[in-house]
Each structure stands twice: as structure tokens, then as C-alpha cells.
Amino acid sequence: MFTVLFWFAVFVTTILLYPFDKQRKASHWHGYWWSNAMVGMNPYWKLEITGLENIDKKQTYVIIANHQSFADIIVIYQIRTQFKWVAKESLFKVPFIGWTASLAKHIRITRGKFSSIKKVYREAATWLRSGMSVTFFPEGTRSETDDMGKFQNGAFKLAIKEKKPILPISITGTREAIPKGSWVFKANVTAHLKILSPVDTSSYKPGDFRLLRDKVHSMLEEAGRAS
Image 1 (cartoon, rainbow, N blue to C red):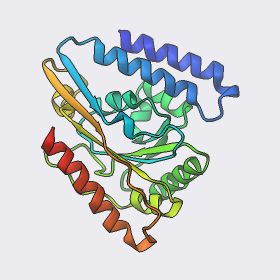
Image 2: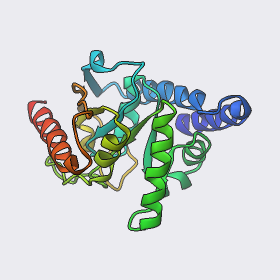
Image 3: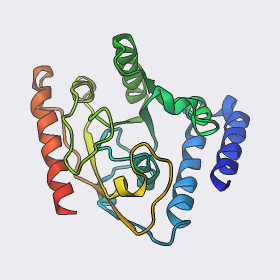
């Protein structure tokens, strides 16, 4: 009930501020409070955060995170940084949460549809050029094991093309918090959110995207093993 009421309030507030907030930053700020409430309402759900000092609030990033469950969205708000998500289309159909995501101008993707993928990267590039970071889960779907899946190439091509640094974020423990296919929070969970050192992309050429992809994948794999 709390979540429904909260997202209803966010939805209404977003509509009221819509004409004055072109980048929809206000609706993103609501996500900080939602994240705090969702983490704090379960006394057995512990979140450890490290590496916040690696974020330059004045910098625009291509944020890359591994993906374990819906809880990843909750915990990443803890970095207290403005960004736009790239999220699957079905999320935008969830009452209030999805409606707010649409109003906030997060980026929707339809899997397996090439025209949608091209549109995603056009939108993401536009946001990056305007000074707004963009968050990708390059595995494309939630991992069902402790091993990360292969990364898709698009986010890394984009980072090189737009000359934006990559901010890698490692997430562990959230699979147990909200298992795949479920919306139910589990108790006695310890999750870790690690913000790693940014990766400068200025020296990478367009054809080097695989090198960049594999570098970031290795960084996140190592960080996950160390959690």
C-alpha cells in the first residue's frame, strides 16, 4: 500500500511540475526517497554502499551496471545522481511506477525490435549531449546465476562516440531480495552496491568498443567476486 500511495503522489507531483522541469529532475529526486523507504522498511534487508567518492556530480556518464533483479532499480537510486534509465517496455505499463517513468522521460526499449534499439541510442545520445547521464544494463536481462551474462555492445559504442566516461556499478545480493519473476521482497538479505572508478573513453576509437566492453565486464566481475 505504501508503494502504491508513494508512486501515486510522485505521479501527481510530476504532472504538476511537468511544464517547469524539462529534464524531469524532480521526478528523479522522488526516486531517492522511494529508495530510502524501500530499503529502510525491511529491518532485515541490509545494503552496503562503497565508492560514492568515485562520482563527479558535474560529470555526465554512461552508467553500466550488472542486473540481478527489480531491486537493482531501487538500490541504484542510492548513488544520488541524475540519470535516465534504459528499461524494457513492460516496466512502463506498471501502474504509477510505469506512468511516472514515462513522464520522467526514461528510455524504453522493445527487445528484439531493431527500430526500437536504434531509437534508444538516439534518445540516449540526446540526453548525454544535454548533460544527463544514462544507465544501461548491458546484459539485456536479469542474470539467473551469480555469473554475469555477456554484455551487448551498444552502450560501449555510444560511450566512445559521445566521448563520455563509463561509470561501472557492481550489484550483488539483490537476486535474493526480489527473485526473478517475483515482486515480493525477501528477508535476511545483504546487498552490496559498489561504484567503481570511471573508465575514460577518450583514447578509444570506434572500432575498440569490444575492448572497452570486455574491460568493464572484467571490472564488474572482479568487484562481484570480492563482495
